[in-house]
Length: 305
Image 1 (cartoon, rainbow, N blue to C red):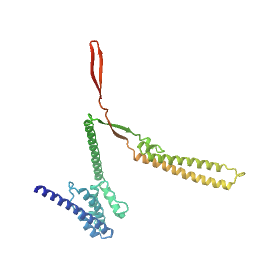
Image 2: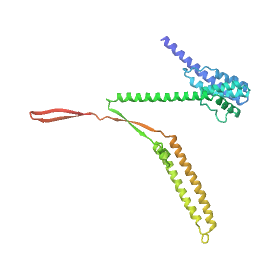
Image 3: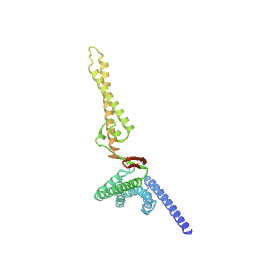
Image 4: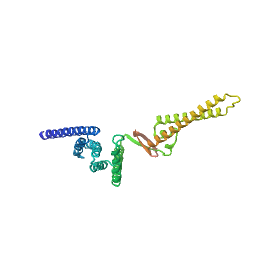
C-alpha cells in the first residue's frame, strides 16, 4: 500500500509543479509584453529571457503549452533586442523562431515595421534551410495522416471480420464528386458537396440577380427607344439612367455571388466520401422438405441465410 500512496503523492507533486511553472511562465510573458509595449526594452529582455530559458521536455504533459508560450515570447524578445541595437542576438532569436516553426508569420499590426523587415531579412538569408524544414514538416504531417488512415482501415477491417457472423452488418457506400461540377453556378457545387441549404441560397440569389439584370436591361432598352415627339423626353432619360444604373448594380452583385459560390464550393470540395451504414442481417430460416420417391418419401429440412 505504501509504495502506491507514495507514487500518487509524487504524481500529484509533479502535476502541481507543472501547473505553477506554466502559470509563472505565462505571467512572465504578459509582463514582458507590457514592458515591450511601454518601451522598457532592457527589462523586457530580462523577463522574456526567463520564459525562453524554461526547459521544454517533449515527454512532459505540459510540453505543448510551454512551447506555445515560448513561441509567443521569442518575437517580443527579438524585437526588444532590435530596439536596444543588439542585432546579432535578435537575428539568432528570429532564426530560432523560424526553426521552431518554419511556417511562422508575425501577427499583422503588432510589431513595428523595422521588426517586420528584420524577420523577412532573416527568412531570406536562411531560405534554403527553412524550405528544407517546411518540406520535412509537410512530410511528417503526411506520414501522420497516412498512418491514421491505415489505422482506421485496419480497425474497419477488424470490425468487419468481427461482425461477419453477427446479425449486424456494415455497408459502405463510396460517393465520388467531380471538380468540374464545383465550378458550376446556381449552387450546383454546394448541392454536390451536400450543403443543401447553402446551395438553395446561392441558386435563389443568383437566379434573382439574373432576373433583375434582364428586367433592368429591358427597361433601359424601353426608355432608350422612347419617341420624343410623343413621350416626355426628360422622364424617358431619367428612367433610362435609373434602369441602366440598376442593371449595372444587379450584374455586379450577381457576378459576385457566382464567384463566391464557386470559391466556396471548391474550398469545401471533397473528392470522395465514404458513408457506412449498419443493417440487420436476415435471420436464417428453416423449412421442411417432403419429396416423394419411387420407393417411399424423403423427409428433411432446408435452411436459407
